[in-house]
Image (cartoon, rainbow, N blue to C red):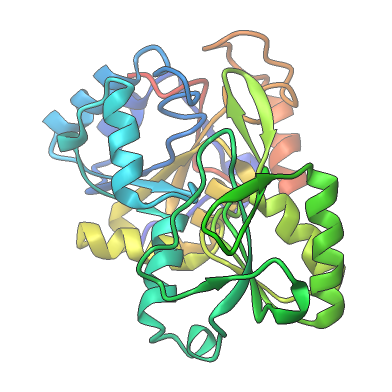
Length: 309
């Protein structure tokens, strides 16, 4: 079985994906989207042609994303940005995993979860539908059996609508939820994401705060093995034939390490400023990458400035 890099000195720094693809044949490529393929607004230079090059070599590509939206929505989004969805065998999102577990309830933890919830969602980005889950959204913490977090901009209402809330207002509600002792399901474990080179606060930040308040959190995505296992099952491969590509050391690379999967760290995403990078495609200093890997205790097999061939 291929081993993931176990320390900073094992990391190989390359200039393009071609070097990885030619050095070893990975059957499955588990690809993060935000910060790797696009910035939420447009594809990164070279990303589309790189996907085409991988596809021509027979690579099975799966989008593995901490997006709180369903898998079909993620593929539609990629199509709208100019990507060809047929290049991927599918997408596994934390939102899809959350939906399936809440619907099926065949997992012991979800089986005992109640049906009434406080729902934190998006406003600017569009609220997340809970249709088909049999849940009752409540606004009174005393009536809630759990907290469901899809976004960081709004509070879901029992009417099905939502009302915009500041992050501080949502955190205040969570203080009451933690005091009551109800669990949280977080449908996007990211702390921040990069959009048009700006960082935006994501649901994982609320979940981390909730744990500090003593609350129980069910993390439905990277860096937890649940999403990697689902992606490998979709591709019909095991860890030794897989490589994960992402821009977050804490989520993408740490998750790959925990799942025994080799990984490629893209430096132009959320860690760009920490690495002192100013422009797209700028190559990170080796010592800076090593220091950051040690800081996050996450060790990629390869490092690339961007998702380019």
